[in-house]
Length: 369
Image (cartoon, rainbow, N blue to C red; front, side, top):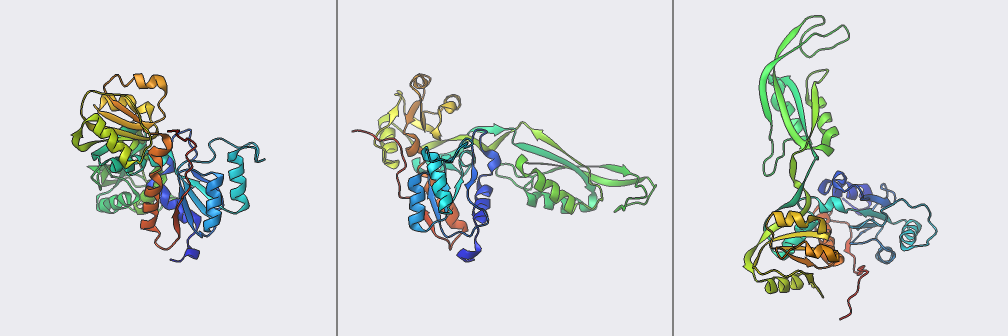
């Protein structure tokens, strides 16, 4: 595959298999923000933010696609006059035919996303989602002749149904009798017009991520032998252990608080850490890239000894109550490793396009030491 054969939509479609846009938060604006998805890719610049400086870097390095974690546009733009950095960034990108794609809270919310990267840098083990989401799973129930059960199941599994945790090809079946009577316009797989037919059928039930609904239905209708396929979908409130906010795991060995803070400062190359003191060793650690104060109660309920995140407000620190060492390491500092995560993922898939890590430090915060 040559550079000329790869279009922007191929890059973005792949990224959305890693972090489906269905998993972004309601306030977010992930996806292609600027640019034509049909354009060929000359190079990809991977960054945490999309700013004027990043667009300049893309121009200088011959990249016409910026893949950023943070969206440059959160709310609708009413003008494009260049009156602020958002408008100027968008204008410059359009002028130079540079596409901007954001992969934000959808990448935060997947099992192998931003928070797993943070946890791996810390050396945490036995990782799991800190606050799994509910309402993102559905169940399909359908009925088919026994002779076609395996074929139909195979198609549904291929489309993404029946994956639960560390198990795939999960389904439930129960035998029964289906009955129907075709009319004059029908072309039945079994039976004849105006004759009541009874068939030994299997009732099949499978769980799947809700955003795959149309793929699942298409696969069912393609594989099923009947002219009219009976099925129904149900939204589930089950927690989905592979999608949600934050992550929690354990250090290989417990550490004294000062040793843990020193480790944290070293592996993230930090200048400063704001933290709440605790009088115990640190073993179980929760993490959340970016603003994570909303997860403090979840960290406490799961007996985290420390919670690594950013953007705590003054009064929110009191909520730690001496039970959790809250380590506020800064928003940029907590998420800058996302660039490496995206570079690694794209390199595994696209071996012969130019992938560049942005060299710009887009952190708007500086520390006077």
